[in-house]
Amino acid sequence: MVPAIELAGVEKTYGRTAAVRGVDLAVAPGEFFSLLGPSGCGKTTVLRMVAGLEEPSAGEVRLDGRGVNGIPAERRDVNMVFQSYALFPHMSVFDNVAFGLRRRGAGRAEVRARVGEMLEMVDLAGRERRRPVELSGGQQQRVALARALVNRPRALLLDEPLGALDLRLRQAMQDELKRLQRDVGVTFVYVTHDQGEALTMSDRMAVMNEGRVEQVGTPRDVYERPATRFAAGFIGTSNVLDGEVVEASGGVAVIGHGADGRIEVPGAPVGARLEVTVRPEKVRLTADEPPARACRVRGTVADVVYQGASTRYGVRTSAGADVSVLVQNDGTADLVADRGDEVWLSWEPRHSYVIGAGATGGAR
Image 1 (tube, rainbow, N blue to C red):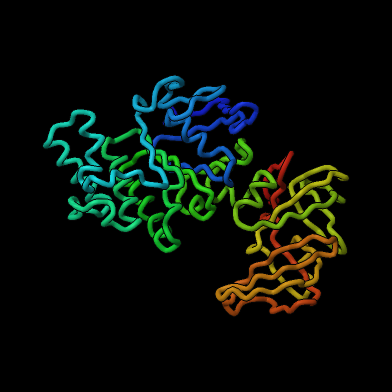
Image 2: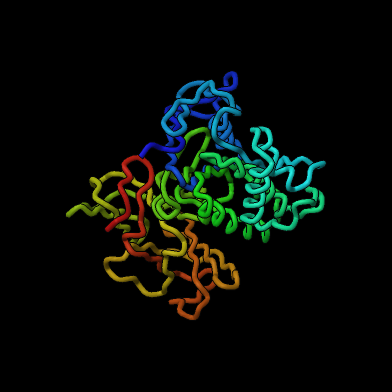
């Protein structure tokens, strides 16, 4: 299948500053693809190069297999939605949505039918004559989406489109955006720095840092099996433990970590020093020593934070690492610990994942 959007070795420099460094990406037709990363990581620059608002310094941008370097934005079959909405304040909702159709010379009947269809889809039917100032932030965002989609572009590019909304409305709009994308079947490329948005909405996502793509995968893959230390730390909370391989046999290596610590990972040679990540919700906190095959480390509770549905424990291991443990307050916890308590932390080997060079996956 030919990708809807493809970037091959794309770079962007401004003077001596490299904003995007050697990005290779392929977005499938009809996919909801997110670019996730901190401010200044290059994700918006990537989006603007796809839109034709910036030209790559090197590499090629392709739409449906066709190179589009040098082709102006108005001749690319993509539309862009910004955080600021960019609505025309003097125009009605209907006229804002109809603007692109009229510029393309669509007839009055076609304009009426397609605008009506889009307003129905974004739940704004009956508000055609209102002006943007009379709408809520969420309604204005829907108008911007309807205006971008009414021309039936091959792809819609969204640059932090929910950033100006409050938390409750932003969460509601996440569900609406995903529903809308499924209904219209258009390829979405969504830029955000919000990990929750990317995990909730994406079919796949790319984690970016300092102009480079650190990892591409489904939300589950990126969360459960981070490829780099940055990806592990940026997506949610992740514990990173390091140590030296002290045993290796049958395709399984054992990393030592402090007093009595044992962490199983896929095969690696004795003496290799590895970093392993494990998510806080995968870790059990107990007073008794865990079963023989469990990954385990010994530690002391340094912090206890009650969060209503859960309690977060901060534990300092005997090797000096800080580990976060998330325990659900559902009455099934193995131990309710206090600061200063000596505890065992354990988890299943399949929840360990080696990060960095040579990472091959979770232990089996």
